[in-house]
Length: 337
Image 1 (tube, helix red, strand yellow):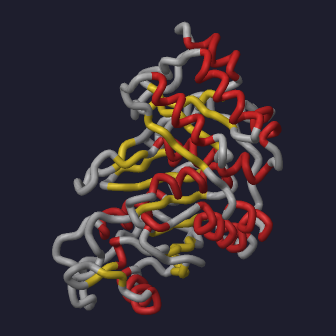
Image 2 (tube, rainbow, N blue to C red):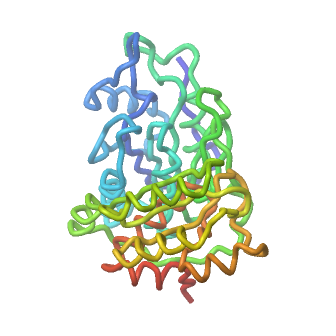
C-alpha cells in the first residue's frame, strides 16, 4: 500500500492541521459521488499514519467546490484563525479544483503572512470505487505529498500546490479542465512583484452575514457594436451590482462613446464600483495608451490583480472592510506602509 511522504530531515515535529473541504479527492463510486466526511477522514488519517504531527479536521462547510461562495471560505478562514490560537501555524487544505484558485486567493487576501497555508486537490479521487483502498491511478497522493513536503519549507503565506508544483496563491489559475498539470502561476520560490502586506482580516460573524449580500457582476466584452453595451448598461440601472467588472481586450482596451461613459457615471451614482480588467490570462492592465484619459474621466477603477480569482478576493475583502462604495473607490489602490 502506498504511504504518504515523511520528511526524514525534520528534527522537530511541527504541528500541521490538515483541513478537508470536499472535492474530487474525497469521492468514490461510479459515477463519482462524495464519501461522507465522517468516513473519509478516518481513511485519510490511516494513510497519513507516518505523519504523527498532522491532525485532520473537517471544514465548517464541505461541498462540491463549484457551489462554494465567499461565505464558505470565510468560515474556513475563521477556522484557521481559531486553530492559530491553539498553536497551529501550518495548514494544508484539501479542496475541489473548480474554485481552488478562488479559495486560495481569498485566503491569501485575508490571512496574508500570518501563517503557512497550502491548498491542494486532485483530478482523481484518493480512494478506489469501493472506498476501501488507495485508487490505483490517482494524482491525490502526489498532491498531498507535495503539500506535506513543502508546508515547512515555504515562507509564511498562502500557496496552491498541484502536480509537483507550488504557486503563490494570488497568481494561481486553472489552465486545464482535466489534465494533471491543471494549474499555472508564479512558483513559490520566486518573489511576488510589488508585493505589499495588507491588513489581516479577522473573520467575525458580521463578515459572514454581510458577504451574503455581495453582488458582483463580471462581463467579458465581446466584439459587438457599442450601442449593445449601452443597452446592457442601461438595463443595469434598475438593479445595479455592488461591483461591475469589465473584462476588456489586451491591456484594457475598450471602445466607448459619450453615452457609455454617462451610463458608467449613472451606475456609480447608485453605488456601483466599475472595474476595468483584462480577459487575457497573463499580464495586467497597461495605461500607456489613449484609454487612460477616458478611464480617469469616467471614474473607473483599474484591476491591479494578478488573476481573476485574485481580483475577486480583493473585491470581497474591500467590501467587508468598508461600508460604502465611495470608500471602496477611495481605498482601491491602498498601499499600506
